[in-house]
Structure formats: C-alpha cells, structure tokens
Length: 378
Image 1 (cartoon, rainbow, N blue to C red):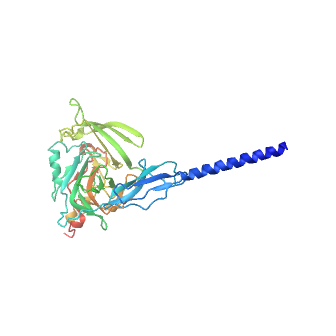
Image 2: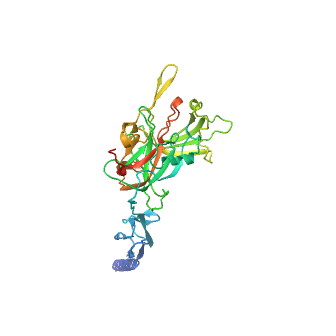
Image 3: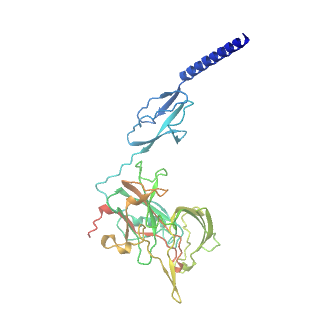
C-alpha cells in the first residue's frame, strides 16, 4: 500500500510540474518584444513584435529621395538578422548620398580652382609667394608649381565633373624630360553633397599606377618634417617616418642645392613647426653615375600611371601630359571601385629621393585637363 501511495505522489508531482511548465511556456509566448525601425527620413517601416528567442524578419529596404540605403544599424553597427531577440530595441537606417555628376554645357577643359596647396620641403619653395603662385596651374598656361619632396600636394577641381569614359579621362601636365621623371601619385574624389569642397567624409581613391601592387611599394607611409631652428642649417630637414611597423628617423640633406637655392627648404608659410603627410611611396629608381669631376643622377620614368613622369613621350596638345583612367581607382585597401565621374583631383610627390645637386625629386604640375574636352587631333 505504501509503495502505491509513493507512486501516486510521484505521478501527482509530475503532473503539477508539467502543468506549471505549460503555464510558463504559455506566459513566455504572451511576452512580445517590440523591434521598431527608424528610417531616418525614409519611407516608413512597421514595427515587429518578436517572441523571445525568435529573430527579426528583415524588412524591405526603405527609400529616401537622393539617397541610397546601406544597412540597418544597432548600436552604430550593421544589424545581424540572425541574432536572437531578448529585449526591445530600435534599428536605425543608414544612408549615403546618391552621387550625381555636375554637367556644365559651357565647361572649360582646364582647372578652374585650386582647393589646397600643401607642399613638402623643397628647393623651389619660398622663392615667391607660394600660395599666390599656385594659381599658375589654373587655365591653359605653362607655369609650373613644385610640390616639394614626398607628400607635398595640390588639390584642384574643374567647373564640371570629369566623366569616366572609354580609356583615359584626365591629362596632368608636368615638366618631365627623358631620364628626369619626378613621379606624383594621383587621387580622385566625388563631391557627394555638391558643396564644392572635398569634405572629410568624402573618400579619396588612388588611381593605381604600374607600381601600386609591387612588393617594394610602401603603402600608408607617414612622414613628419621638422622646421630647423633659426640657428640650424636651413638646408638640412630632420624627419620621422613610420611604415610597416617601422620607425625611421633621419635628415634630408639639401646642402648641395644651396648655391642655387639659398632660401630655407621648409615652407615658411606654415605656422606649425612640423608637417605630416601620409600616402603611397614608390621605391626609388634613381641611380648615380660618376663622371670624374662631377656626378650625374639618373631619374628614370616609371612604367605608367604617375604625374610628371612620361609626358615627354606625348606630342601636340598633350605634350608634357601623363594620362589617367578613372577606372584605375582603388580604395584604401587596394580594392577596385567603380566611379562614374569625379570632381576633385589631388597630386602628391611619390618619392623621398634626394638626387644630390639636382635636389629632391619633387613633382611639378603645370596644368590639368578633362581629356573629353580636348581636341587631341591638333
């Protein structure tokens, strides 16, 4: 009899446990978490009510005039729709502006505005008003500006967007001649918000040249130049460079050009006592030939894709120009990007070479043009 009661008690307890569990499950199913969608000005997306432990169903992408939907964000990170829901939250829509090229029926082929001139130390700086002389590259003229050694740059635009057409799109004129190349990296940017300036959130893309993917090319090379103190030699520029987990400190010696260029090498219009540049640095191909009483420095051209590099090979209206295809644009990771057009162009010196009495291997820019507007048959 005792044994039968024990079995009955166990069965009673088991039935009570099952009952409580069923109630608990039923109660869990009655709890729903609201997941709402903030389209941030775009088309409305209905909230979803999720059973604990279930996942959110990805809704159709919202729309917003003039913008392209990117992703739904949670805590500023793209949301994983496979994530189990255990609380209420709101997903925020992320957008980017839809780029629309600027079409100008009265466009000129040449540069119409210089947005920035940031030269590095060099022998052709500080001889005139550098910030005024940068206007030399506007229009169809033949006066050059020098960018100084590695990193020195100029940024400019046209009165229209340069379209990515068939083949080459941009001509950048320098003053190269055979065995005296001074290569410059070319970068491009789109004016996504049409405010006429290259904003910090508008990405720049490098037009990859022949050296871009070679092992000896250094990407993300950062160098800081220091202004000499008044009592120090103004033709010796100290620097600190970082690249590939390497820190390098040294001096750039411009003393052999002092007889021709006695002015300071560090650009005097900078208020700061140090200037920093970051970019892609090409391995130097300069070589030195001993001529007995003197030396000759050879600066051979690179294969293709650099300003002030092989323009001496062109003829006619393109004499002095290197040509660039927007289709060679890559992002900061070296991945190809498709650009239908660009609005801003930046050129910076690509080497740190000091070629003895020839001085730094500084990129010089004369002018630039939209190839689609040039009559190259002249």
